[in-house]
Figure 1 (tube, rainbow, N blue to C red):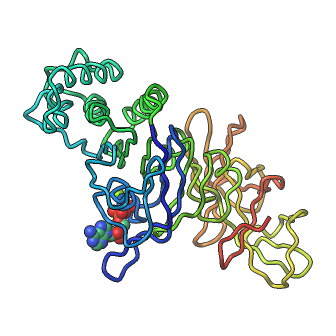
Figure 2: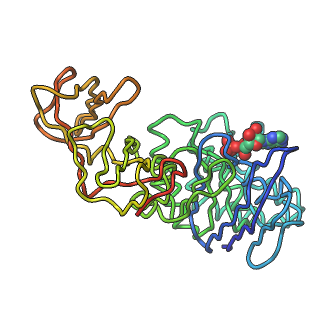
Length: 353
Ligand code: ADP
Ligand code: MG
């Protein structure tokens, strides 16, 4: 187990800054998920922690020791890649013991460590198999086993579930959470998938263009985002954003002419442009004879997602489990749950509270 601290880490590739002043403190035993869109710098950041990439400036501290200049092999880190990088011609046992054998560890030590890891990972029955005859989930466990046997106290995962089908992904999410509890290990896990972040993390770091947007536990980020990006990134379907204008007295939503917002934060500037955020479950629809029209309905069984056209380019998504199901083409009256609205500055994207 280990505590990992990143201090003002920066990475340039040529002229472009890929990681910009990233500072994160990961507690011993935490499951930390770094989440952000493709290309935002997740893999680069993980490679910097592993020592496979040198930061342009800043430092990496593991268990109070500055390891910025320490060789990857001596950082006590195990990395599990998306493709698991197992040796196809080796058995499960040989794959798991590879690192220790390369270091000429005593045979009895190797045997003991591999057996222990196999037991935790429920791989004991599979020790003589080769990767080709294992399922995706089993391969993943072998890759984790290799990291455990190596004596890692921090596990780094780079999008390990993105090659798996939907059903197995759900299974592996639960499995990884269970393993984390059992091992008590510090895990740093990167993904572009907000569901993985929401379901597995103790702590989420939202990364965008190499910058940290917000850090916090899943529900805190979901219910109390600091900015429009975090608000829109976490949650599925995403939060709706509506343009609004403050005329000095009222805050008017441009595309919902009949909806009046009674309570909003104090806005000083006249003509200030505001973005209103509302989650789909807080958009309420009522059958009507005129007004907006529903264009698509996604029926998911236990609930439905309604897409209401607001104007040429915008839809408003509404999620509901109501019995009175609405049909495409029907007119509806839209109201927003006033208690659950978010307000953002249109220019900066920052939350106005
Ligand atoms: P992510 O894992 O979030 O998708 P990456 O960390 O792989 O993002 O990449 C972040 C950015 O850095 C991308 O724009 C990518 O093209 C760039 N990049 C990554 N590695 C290199 C490299 N070795 N040389 C130049 N640019 C790189
Ligand atoms: Mg990546």
